[in-house]
Image 1 (cartoon, one colour):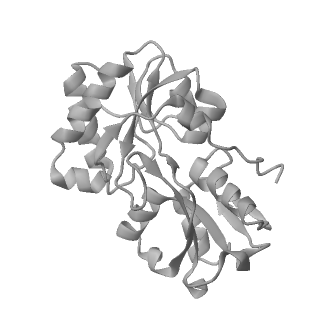
Image 2: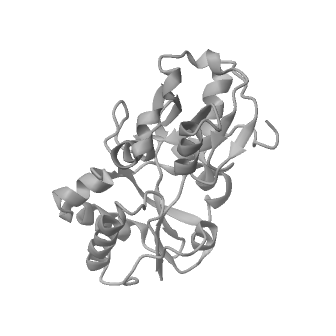
Length: 247
């Protein structure tokens, strides 16, 4: 079986993620001894041996619905969000502090990847609603890389996952070179998933108990508050904009 927690896995959270998985595994009394960290996300999500992973809302609604089961949605306690929801932040260089979003008409925009809810879909829907058109697009491969591109002046603005933004502010010195411009509308956050032949209800209980068993230090490192259940229909109802190649 395969278990993965790669969405918010960075050097400062890796040990806490390992302990979180150990608690889940103890509750299940089965599963791999260690998390998989060296495998492509899509290969893992499509693997029939998948026991536990986390995906993004856009991959779920566009490609994975019907192939994986939702276990539950973590609540990260993000300000201004219902439990289990998150948003994207639009960040620019600190020199643009206080700038209105409309001043970024035609700006160079960085996003992590085309199938990202927080890096692409939510920001573009936000720009579309405000009738703002971005200029040149830069695909960076990751939220951290998008933030660094803004800090280094290689792009004008980027869309980041709200929790990733909190982790960047906590752990990365270049965060002082960035400023928050806007937040998008909250949507359900990244769900935990499993393969179709697993018992999702059993996994929900195991993850809930594991979160309760985390130390305060690990819970703070992972920003984990609780596990909630958000229906598949709520994920599927989120609008999907044009792809970067069509934008």
